Amino acid sequence: MGRRQSISSDISDEEFEPTRKCNSNNWNHLLAQFDSQPDMIKLIQSCKEEEERRCEEETKMRLKEYQVFRQLQYIQEKHYYEKKSLKDFNLELPPLYK
Image 1 (cartoon, rainbow, N blue to C red):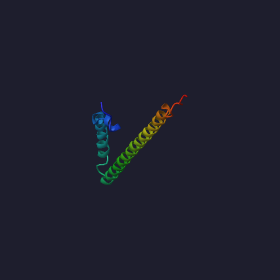
Image 2 (image 1 turned 45 degrees about the horizontal axis):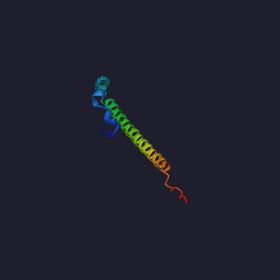
Image 3 (image 1 turned 60 degrees about the horizontal axis):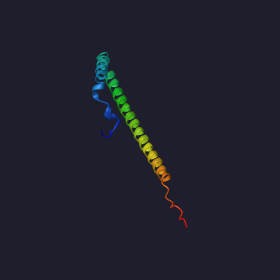
Image 4 (image 1 turned 90 degrees about the horizontal axis):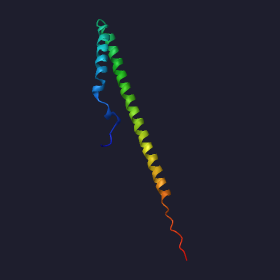
């Protein structure tokens, strides 16, 4: 089994389908309440778009934080094992006996 390329590779769109349908129904119901107020609908839609952009940026930041964390962890582990391997090997020559 190969190494995962990203943490999102474990998440499939099917897992979120029931939530999307529910949110879509709620969204349509909300908009239907403002049929007679097109300005209000535009405002609601622009707020929704802004919130979606904010969530997307937040997700990108979390992913970037995770990537930086993993890189630091890798560097620390690499440094630890390099340091440990140097201690495990005695590079000094044994004393010569006369």
